[in-house]
Length: 212
Image (cartoon, rainbow, N blue to C red; front, top):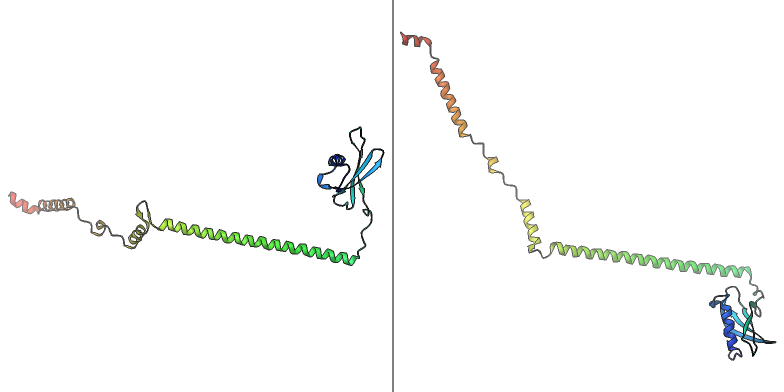
């Protein structure tokens, strides 16, 4: 705003009317004010719209002592030099500026990619370190100290010792089969029967002699 505006109330009304047609970020400061006579005042605000350098928001209001101020017109108007073409720049200079800008963008992208690779490498190293810590912790739990009153190392040593000793043979398997006493007695009975049969089968001549 100008340092000493004569129309502070009109400036507030003018800005509010502009907000109904454009975003607040596109409205700059109050840079000028003009009394057009016949109870009409025009206020000028800088334009912050992209593509409109040097343009101004213009708001015309009625200003009568016996009436409330009202907005008559709002528009975007060019300021001094807004419609003039920029100074001519040779094509070679513009091309050099373009190439320099492109190289700067590529360098920035390359730095970002390297930074991302470094971050990924740090994450991988961190994961490996955590896995090693987990392995160490698991080893302590499985092989260190007592678990439920049992010394794990001692129990493992006993198991390994049992695996190294050869299995004892079953004494029943090594001893020859003992003859069954019942089988022996049955064999002797068979021999006696054979001898009895032999005696009965003596020569008949001997028997005849006895009968005569």
